[in-house]
Length: 367
Image (cartoon, rainbow, N blue to C red):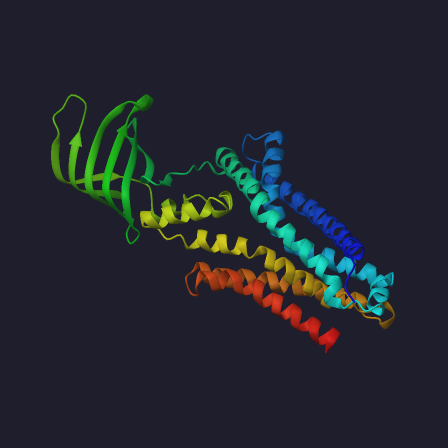
């Protein structure tokens, strides 16, 4: 028997309602936790409650993306349990509808939800989280980004305190070798108080050493002076390789649509883009993971109440969801460290969860 359109829409509405309730409830819990954490972090700084509330709202969409698989799992289990308790699924299956047929509307629904979150919600979340990080740097950490990568090359900003004077050095390089952070075709602009231009240095290479930038084959230009040449110039710095790499735009602050271009630019500049590539593939595999959560929810929610053990199965389903989350993060960590290929690390958890959920459902329902 084929599933009618009316029944498909009815099942789809039921799942949408259950997922929405689970998503809203979990988001409120996460928001309360984030609010307490933000209040704790801003206790020693001058940040009013309005700023804290703004930061909370800016971070909330990213939290929503993180909890979406759990919301699908719990919402799916709630929906299937209620429909089984009300004998709606019993009647449907007695009329010849298989478990795969009445799960199909839910699978289509979560695929659409996943596609919406990837293509529309993710760019909005990235923009808001970028603003959150700006406020965090302003009111909490005090650290601002010192590095930018564009199609024209790499830009690094550092401030040097020379006695009572403050100098700002802006480095531009066309290419980077990450080992030791060696810059090629380097231009260094030096600015003084009130952004007054002091001079410019053109160097063949610049290497980041312990508390020093070592510039090689340097041509120095200063206002009102003839150009001069030095084989080596040393500039003081407090920067480290780790600090510079940490200043890259975080993957979560970049839109799904912007990431491929940023990855190409990052690799062209000579940096590893493995974290950004990993995040892009993990985001792309998100809808598959949501489908897997529906199948896992079905495995633990279709038992008839009169047969007992329903509560135990629901608890087992929730625990399974956390196990999937833990293993997913573990595989992602291996992918980001380069131990396994990025595509395998990003897609394997979703595909394995999908196959396990489908296999268990086949065993219990059709086996």
